[in-house]
Structure formats: structure tokens, C-alpha cells
Image 1 (cartoon, one colour):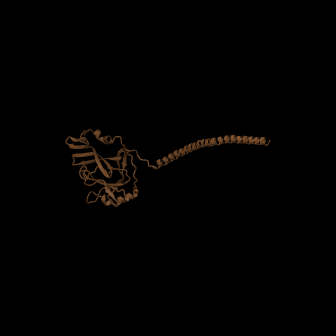
Image 2 (image 1 turned 30 degrees about the vertical axis):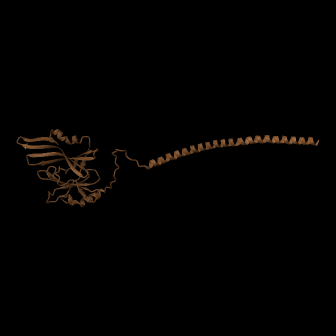
Image 3 (image 1 turned 180 degrees about the vertical axis):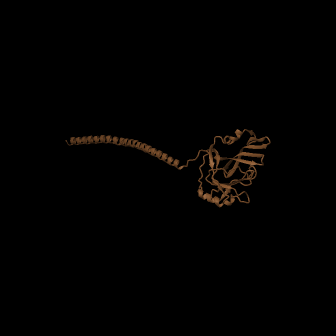
Length: 287
């Protein structure tokens, strides 16, 4: 009986051990498969996170780059295209007109006429023929039967330190010191916008006796500190026994008609703006 009981107990123990072994094998399989699933899920999650992070970083980087480029573009000075003729205007401090007149008056000895040098009848005026903001003084005296006009022409220096001669005494026009008749209240003016030049039309008349006279149409232009006269046409009058004989020539000496002579300025400066210069002449004789 004891033997039977012993066999039965052994069989029960073996059955229990077998059941435990099967349970452990099932748990071991689940345990081995779990890390694989966890690794794969972690990898996928990391990949998704990395992708999202990369996308956000890239978008942020692009936005920052655009902003930096915009700021850089704003900080770079805009330059004129290569080959452009545009120029940056230079700042120029022009003295007040009253101050410029004072400077011209202080240098009066340079542009007045001495009684021993010329006739005491002379006049002067302040003007700005080239419109550069610097005043000029023009003094002149027309005298004699030959109708000679003598003139002085000075301009205030930009720094106000003095005045400069715009037309030197050793320059000859018709004869030494002979200017066109400039002592006029109004003078026709033509403005060439392309070259920024103003042309003032006068007539230079001379006589070398009672029987012969010449009149020349001239244009005065002041540019870059130099006064220049351009002769456009001339009219010659010769008195003979048959009366006055007139002839007209262009600037090259070719014969033209009287009508062409009278239209010389309009033809020479065609298309330019026309105006009239008004001058207020002051007698220097009484001063």
C-alpha cells in the first residue's frame, strides 16, 4: 500500500513539473518577442520624431535665412547700374546773396573804372548768368564814335574768400577790350537744357569812320568760370555816292539774306527755351 502511495505521489510531482515547464516556455516566447516589438516601435517613433524635428528645423532655417537675406539686402547701399551716367549731386553751401554782394563790394577796386583810364560814364549790375548760385558783377562803359564797349566781369568764389575774373583783359573780341553793347535793360536768352548753358544775345557795333560800320550778332555764354562770346552773323554797311550798301554774312563768312540775319539767333538756338534777362544797371560815375 505504501508502495502504491509512493508511486502516486511521484506521478503527481512529475505532472506538476511538466505543467510548469510548458508555462515557462510560453512566457519566454512572449518575453523574447516583446523587445523586438519595442525596438521596432521605438525606431519608428524616433524616425517620425526626427522627421518632424528635421522638417521644423528646415522650415525655421529657411525662414531665418530669408530674414537674414532681407536684412542684408536692406543694409547694402543701392548703386547705379554699371555704365550709368547718373551722379550723386555734391552738396554746395551757397552764401546768402547779401553776403555775396558784400564780397563783391569789398573787391570794388578790381571792377571799377578810373577816370584816367576810361570815360567816367560807366555802369555796373549784379546778376547770375549761369544760374550756379554765385553772384557776378558786370561793369561796362560804351564810349566814343567807334562805339567801343569796355567791361569787367567777376564772380564770387565758392568759399567766399574773394572774387575771380571771368573774362581776362588780354582776350580780344573785335579789338582789345571791345565787348558787345551789354548795357541793356533786357537781353534775349536761350537755355540749352542738355548742356545746361545759357546764351545771351547782344549786338557788337563798331564804326571806323562815317562811311563804314559793322554790326555783329553775338551770344554770351558763361560756363565753368569762363565767359565766351560766339559770333553768329554780321551786317556790313558801306556809304557810297549811291547811298548805303548793306551785305549780310553768316559766321563762316558766307552771304545770307537780311531775313536770315534777323533770324540768326532763333535758327542757331532752335528748340531751346527762350526767356528774357532783366538787368538793373547802377551808375558808377557818381560813386
